[in-house]
Length: 75
Image 1 (cartoon, rainbow, N blue to C red):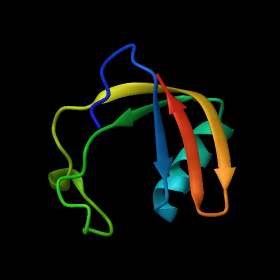
Image 2 (image 1 turned 60 degrees about the vertical axis):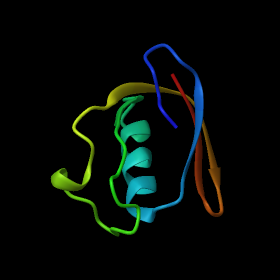
Image 3 (image 1 turned 90 degrees about the vertical axis):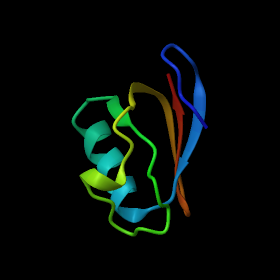
Image 4 (image 1 turned 120 degrees about the vertical axis):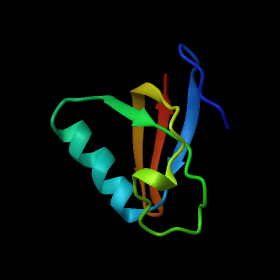
């Protein structure tokens, strides 16, 4: 999926470390996150070189915690 500026898109986060990152941002009142594609989804803990260099700032419009992760509506 490609997220373009101004576009609304659903996103499901299942990796525990990313769920914690989203929780941390939301608990501090910051609903803006950076979104970028991971080049190899098999990498458990991606570093700077594992992410695409181009991304998008996204605003969390809605967040729903589920047993298997977090579901977001981003803009």
